[in-house]
Image (cartoon, rainbow, N blue to C red; front, side):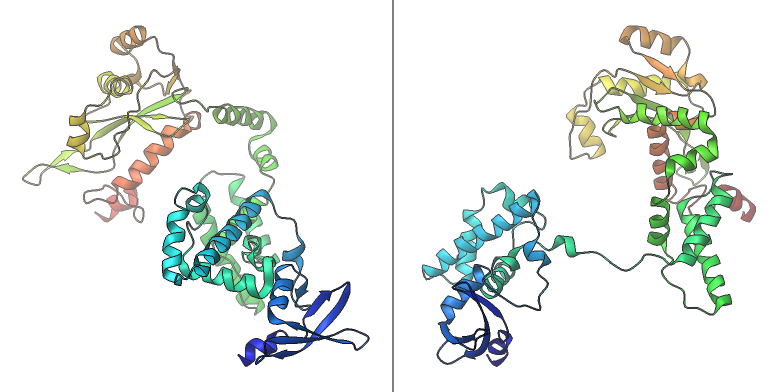
Length: 409
């Protein structure tokens, strides 16, 4: 109680167009003594002081007032209004004689139909949170209820000037001449060079991790870098292609298909290797939904591609979902406006031609050696390969590539 009383000593109180300062808090009688610049003293009750805090007419002069005076955006206004409604409702329930637990349970039921209460960040507040809001509101008023999300985050620099220069030099040396530089490899190389440089200069290394490198890369003018690497003419073509891909917003507007051999060996019951399976997949570019997926043995064929595309038109039965064990039985079916693939032999032939004529489909084929023309299916195959290499029998892993693993074997 002594700490609570001393906390308000020195607070400013605006009363009758005059500024007063709290000089004494009477714990026993529950009153506060105020004095203005002329030395006149005024005694107010503790209840009156609480009302002044709630009206933001009493506050700590040493407190940062930026949060209290700043304008709230729409999201913060909704959050502040929600907290006020919670406090009003809980105080009415508490005033009716309910305990905190009983009042909170009734509050939860009363707000069960409130869409904002359960869709806000963090969900519906816990009993401890409601108690904290009530205490803050009584002690500091509405200013304490304002969301403080904008104050979150690490305000310290992500990197120093030395690390930034080293990272930029590596990018200029490696990235402009080759596309084999991944962000992970860049982080390892920049950290090693930076720490070696710090050892030479006898200085303590600063932040030099993955987030530091990403912060440097995000500050770069990407348009200028693409022009430096590809040239103005080619960079413009790549930008137009990227804009065309970004314009895809309707499902089944563009479907990409491709076939590849999985990096895994399958064996029979006796443990003898059978071979590596072939997978053919089709993905919707607008939603990222896998529309068709077929696994077969041997080289890719037009029959495999036709079966994969057929999955886009065919509704799946309950037996299909039960056999594979799929719980979310979402039917992703329809007629695509355009199918994009490479110029492999499996994407042509009499079977594909009759299939296209009967289904009235538009099939576009990319230029050889340019996988960036169908980035969605290439990303799917990359993630599928990464997933497959986790299993026993994989021909390569993320730590050991196929060539290195062959040398070891």
